[in-house]
Length: 430
Ligand code: GDP
Ligand code: IMO
Ligand code: MG
Image 1 (cartoon, helix red, strand yellow):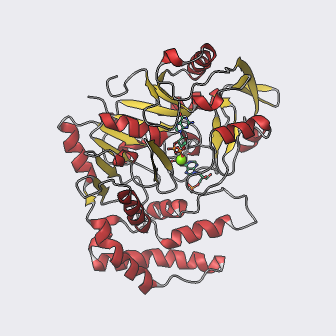
Image 2 (cartoon, rainbow, N blue to C red):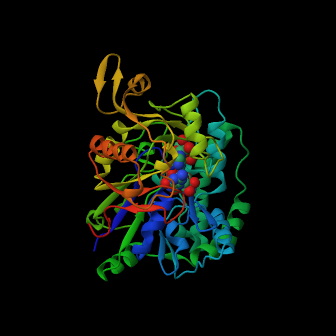
Image 3 (cartoon, rainbow, N blue to C red):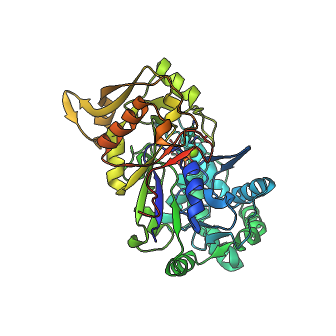
């Protein structure tokens, strides 16, 4: 019985939500293991559209257990709002269907304020964060001053935790010219939200271990994308967590052998939100066309996503780092009607050929894509549900991607709709 981890293989927004929703029919448990409500996942099911940030994308399927693992950073006030919004769309969420790890760090209002204050400083280059306090909360976790879910259960501990956080944050805030945090107000807010969160709190490591021994299938849901990974992404223009497959186990409290199959989610072209290097970025009509046809606007911030050609160098690299067994290739339909398509097969950096993205920022900035040109197709692939429905040129494009990234296509997605999906290899059965 295989357990599967889904990982974004580019800069996020690859269509993970759609694929996780589709795969979750075959799973018993869907677990988030990193990131927070910086994620924005859109699910289209019939005439309903669900927008999820912190909740696992499997939540819209009844009868599944959704888990928020300790590797996540959780904004309790946002979660309560998100639960209410999803419930209003007819989804049942109870402590039986949602569990939150007791050791999950909490995002506080002052984390968001700090995130935004830093981004507003003109003296250093912006990261282009979502402004949701993700980075500052992870910093506090590592700095041993974060408030965790379990701390909400005991009044004395909560005060101690808040005081520890405030010593650090008030010093920082004074340097940034922000007024000090109101201790009583934050404690009151935490006490008020505590029961709303504690009812979902559980020793997730134990529950998942037991479910695994009982033969239940676990789907680990990654957020963001591998090029935003804190270690392997385009640092410092990254998010503050490990997003790659190796994080799935530590992000919920299981051993590394808990994951049998890593599935990379890969868009048929490339997008990025926020600042940072992007070798195949297009500033021309082709880029505009990708953005318009692909509706490339961020779910969380509404920002226009930067668009470019498929970069096989980067995806080969991220597939290797996560040990991907297969990929789900999404948004192939967005490429319909292009006369020719380009795929980046290597970089030229000052006359030297690279088959990977070098780590040095200066070299990354000078990396010029070396392209291979492929024939496009005039036919529509939108809504295709079998290989036979795809034009020959589209099949060639997909096959060439598989060769270049050295990883097979296990799934193909041809529209936002749940069922417009072609299954080539079932990751749970592999
Ligand atoms: P995530 O963050 O990886 O879950 O991706 P997002 O939800 O932020 O962005 C992906 C967008 O593409 C969503 O609006 C999806 O509904 C949509 N989408 C997913 N798969 C496909 C596809 O195969 N074709 C098209 N046209 N849209 C898709
Ligand atoms: P999903 O799960 C795309 C980007 C931000 C910024 C950088 C750091 O929807 O794929 P942060 O707020 O995390 O400190 O911002 O990371 N970013 C994403 N880009 N998709 C996401 O999530 C992202 N989550 C963060 O735009 O460049
Ligand atoms: Mg997204």
